[in-house]
Amino acid sequence: QGQLVQSGGGEVQAGASLRLSCTTSGISFTTAAMGWFRQAPGKEREFVAAISWSHGNTYYSDSAKGRFTISRDNGKSTVYLQMERLKPEDTAIYYCAADVSNGGSWTHRTEYDFWGQGTQVTVSS
Image 1: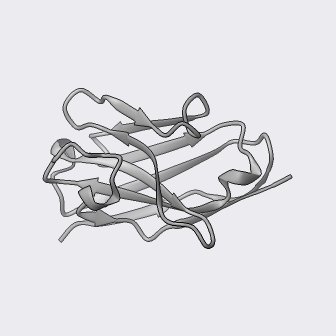
Image 2 (image 1 turned 120 degrees about the vertical axis):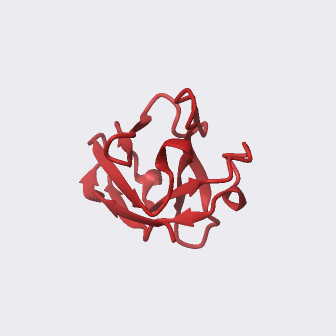
């Protein structure tokens, strides 16, 4: 059974940077697409970023594009989300996710098979 353990997050001021990490076990990480989602209070979980397994192709939401960077280290079975120039509207619980079936619809949360425990990111103005 796949397990995803997240680290990072916290409370920062607007304009600061944070890096989230997500280390996996029990899955074939090198053939899994990985994604990050977030959920703000009272809102649905939304797509933030994804990275393919084959060529490391990356995909971003409009709100993340240009400020966030997703990357993966296959040797460590870990995916990262580097977040720059954070805004108060980035405040949410962030979740990493693994798609081991590689259906390709990586912006959709239903595509993913395993999820991390979530980590809070709070950005104050």
